Length: 332
Ligand code: ACO
Image 1 (tube, rainbow, N blue to C red):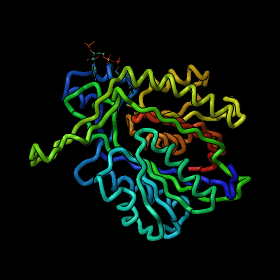
Image 2 (cartoon, protein in one colour; image 1 turned 90 degrees about the horizontal axis):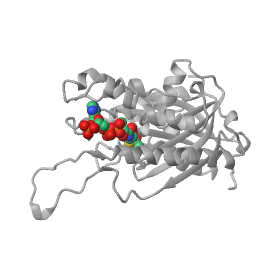
Image 3 (cartoon, rainbow, N blue to C red; image 1 turned 180 degrees about the vertical axis):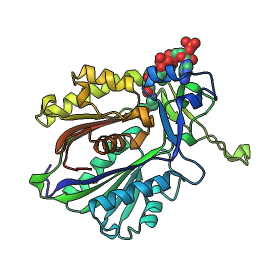
Image 4 (cartoon, helix red, strand yellow; image 1 turned 45 degrees about the vertical axis):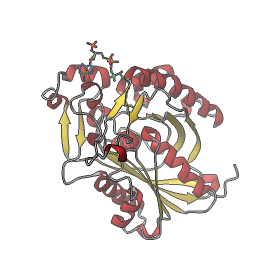
């Protein structure tokens, strides 16, 4: 495609709720053990929102940090995209509510739903507005609050998720300096509903007077196999497309669904552990926030060098999956 401008990543930020739920806390809720959870998922703890917190409050926190680091006035933001599958309200959108909280009065706003792939889908959608010259500064947020949507008595799903938000500011630069080296997005209708969160259980004819939220339902084995099938494949496809080799990638940043998936993909791609970012042990699966939170964690703990080249891959409900190669010039 003809690019009039390039994309520059100005900042990465994240926000986590203050309440920490350890595996040992879950042992009190249902029949499980820290050992089972850790060996199957790599998770030791997750953060969950408390009564004074919400998806919006985490988004505001992450967005304000991202704007400060980028030294961008909220009024200079042209577009806000919030990627989420667990919005606080069906409407108004999270992005419109966020706009009001941060004073980004000149921005257009919309939410994007691609579950755990949301951040990659959002990044590539944002890039199109920058490439065409339509917008100069875009705030992208990935946020999910699965603690509201898991059945806390159902051990196979409840152990996996944590709440969190990640935010980045993307700006336009000269086309030759483009830091988004390439991307691929894919989707495949989940006809067997291996990963669902229903919102279709209320009917006029039932005259229900109470909204009954449903919970995340997952066929864990099917999702594991899906990830192992598509993630290595899209990685190779994107490297081919960008004329790069895995040796040129400094860090592999996968959606933090499960450490076993991360390890198995890294093995298939023959990528050493030192090149694979992971913070799932501390935060669980934070869905649309997981990729930015993994990068923020690695930057904050000086685990990675910058500038660096990163291969980011998201995968999740839909089914959806997507990959992007980016240059990361951010220091912290
Ligand atoms: N604690 C203790 N025992 C448990 C737990 C638990 N939390 N959960 C399930 N078990 C039991 C099961 O009941 C079963 O017992 P049984 O043999 O008596 O029937 C046994 O453990 C094995 O259950 P499996 O479902 O076969 O467990 P498995 O080893 O497959 O691990 C897991 C489950 C971790 C979910 C695995 O399928 C997996 O890694 N799936 C990938 C899916 C994933 O990571 N999804 C993340 C969210 S989706 C996304 O982000 C895209």
